[in-house]
Amino acid sequence: MKQHAPATERNREAIREVLARELPETGTVLEIASGTGQHAVAFAKALPALTWQPTDPDPTSLASIAAWRDDAGLPNLRAPALLDVTQLPWPVDQADAMVCINMVHIAPWEAALALFANAGNLLAQGSLLFLYGPYRFDGTTAQSNEDFDRSLRSRDPRWGVRDVRDLGAAAAEHGLVMRGVVAMPANNHSLLFRRA
Image (cartoon, rainbow, N blue to C red; front, side, top):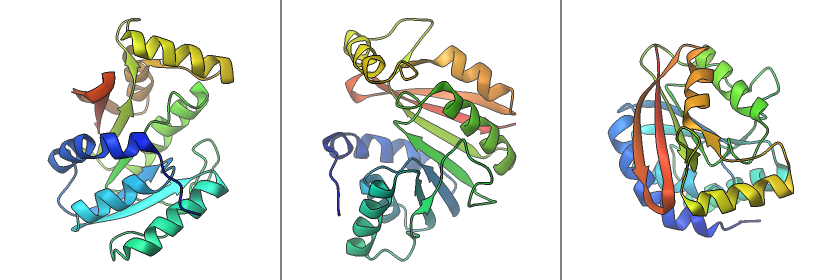
């Protein structure tokens, strides 16, 4: 049941460093599109004062997250919840921060809009929405991301590497302000939004 994503092994420490600086000291972190569950286990283990709530819309991913969670035995890692960002109501009504890694480019644009809308409703003033992945900046990005974008769009024309300018504008409509951009390995970036 446990799935493995090699990219998760490569990027988790760099992401953990940013999260350790930006997340609150205590509270509940809602992870959107948790995938295999490897990140959830790694971050719950590294940040034991935080409660980690993994979610995913895919039954296979939910089973993988559960298997990783069972093996880890961490008291602050909750059972995974079924969550499709575009479907209301969400199975949670409160979070002290939200983390979304590698989703907005592997989903229709409507998913990003739904993510921002629900983050705007769930998060308290000053709370973090953390996004990680490959992005465009004013229409340009690294060649590896251009190649990845073509691959994504060949699989589904609604997918693709998003522009930070568009993400920032969409987030602002729901009271989320971009407070930082952190360059990450392999031409990825962390985007730090805060609820105004």
